[in-house]
Amino acid sequence: MTREPYRLYIERIDPSKNMARYYALSIEPNLFGGTSLVRSWGRIGSRGQQKIHVFDSEAKAVDLLLTLLRKKRSRGYRVMR
Image (cartoon, rainbow, N blue to C red):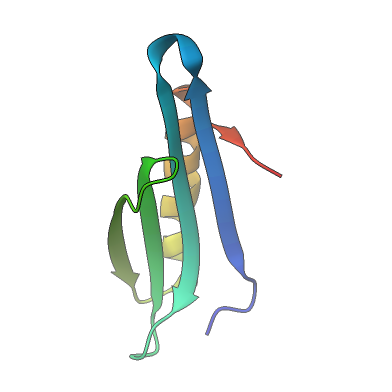
């Protein structure tokens, strides 16, 4: 089971390009004793898309979360508070 809740929401807004996107990541326990990384993304205000990655350990899910965060930050996404 996940001991720490991992939830992250980032946005990329550029009015000159008519761009308003979001990217959400969360790590959650699954029914089989493993851990899932849930990714959601799309245009702000829309339902968007979702993908779920299943791992046997929380550490692997955290590694992917950090990798995706670095990639998105390099593309201009910013953490929202």
